[in-house]
Amino acid sequence: MSYESKVYQLLEANTAKYYAEKLSYGLKDLAPVINRQTMNFHYNVHYKGYIKKLNEALGNKPKPPIVELIKNIKKYDDKVRDNAGGYYNHSLFWKYMHPGGTPFEGKSELGKAIKSTFGSFNNFRNEFVESGKSQFGSGWVWLVKKDNRLEVVHTPNQDNPLMSNAGKPILGCDVWEHAYYLMNGPERGEWINNFFKIVHWNHCNTIFISD
Image 1 (cartoon, helix red, strand yellow):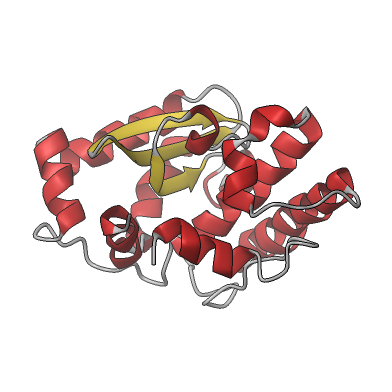
Image 2 (cartoon, rainbow, N blue to C red):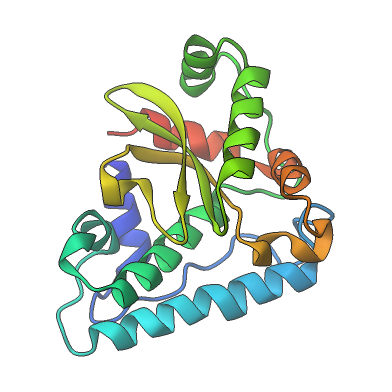
């Protein structure tokens, strides 16, 4: 089963309405990188708010699987774009993280691709952090796979790389202030560096090797 098919199953058991992705860990379990208060606001207020507004924006219209909607986002207005991105990006984001993180395996398919593309894991990490820091205002930083190559990109607001055919998201970090301000204040770079402590590399590798 392809990665996108798995996403469809997770996010759209019934496309009459979009539903929140359930967390596989508790609100406090990503501490100290992400404290409980931030996770509570992020998941229960921001994330669920995007879902509510997306369902409202589409009204009684047929609701396609979220990946299909994201890829065809130019057909929709800005309200749908913003909230669909907020829903999809965060549904991915929760799965990119794991309490305490999982080890980065240099011999995994993703590990070998990162070394081939960036020269080393540290080079990749530095580029990822700098790209996230350079995003003006709110947005996201991503590791994407396109044409069997890896690339680091950043997107504004709640845009997703699939919206502009920039590649399949392999890893993404939220650089909106609500993601880190209660822990790191204005130090976005500190937040992105700390994010690497909780990355679920096993999950990222699974995405990378899927069709």
